[in-house]
Length: 276
Image 1: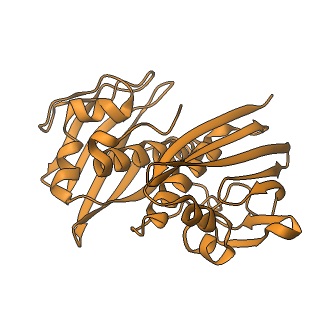
Image 2 (image 1 turned 60 degrees about the vertical axis):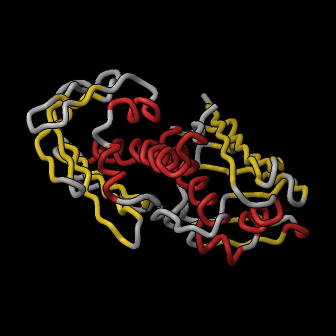
Image 3 (image 1 turned 30 degrees about the horizontal axis):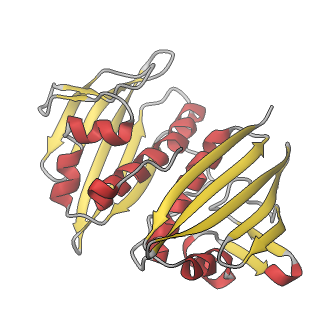
């Protein structure tokens, strides 16, 4: 059984800048992977390390490229090969990057996490902005699920967004209900989860609420925010799991949502979801 993933994102940089970020080994190790080796003319495109799923060794084989337009390679997992195609399309003064990852023979959660973070960081790097912390796939969650991001808006704006039902409904792709007081309802509208109850409100610093787990049981979600040079550093800790496997499942599921929140706040009315 295989699965596929398709994502699309716009970058305010020309295709030459974006293609170089994707194919220069030195640049790749700045924003993408712990290790990378690239020689397009020799047919080599490899990356590995902590920041890639199954990153114990290089698993990629270049299958084609068109400078400043496209890059294709296979990515072979222990369960079998998959195919990746990245297409760069000029649009006005920017570039639209479309990802197709097809015939994926493994659970898609890790790759969905990987590609959301990757595309968000490709945008930030190509636009000369700060990237979000890379996701470490080498050490699964133990006890708690912890994920981080950096949002290029003031901390007051980021904090207010977490209590804005209408805004949260946009990136959450579902009806959100928030009663912004301790003891109030915090319901993201996700199937099999919630509604939950706010347990902590610390203006511009922290938000926490209970979380009803899928299949029963409860856990706890806490968002911590801090300001630095006009941007917001956000740390989410999801705790109280019955076992580490559930914690790791949560750790993989949160980053795509944080990426979309980051993009929505940074882009405003220009935002569109990555998934298509």
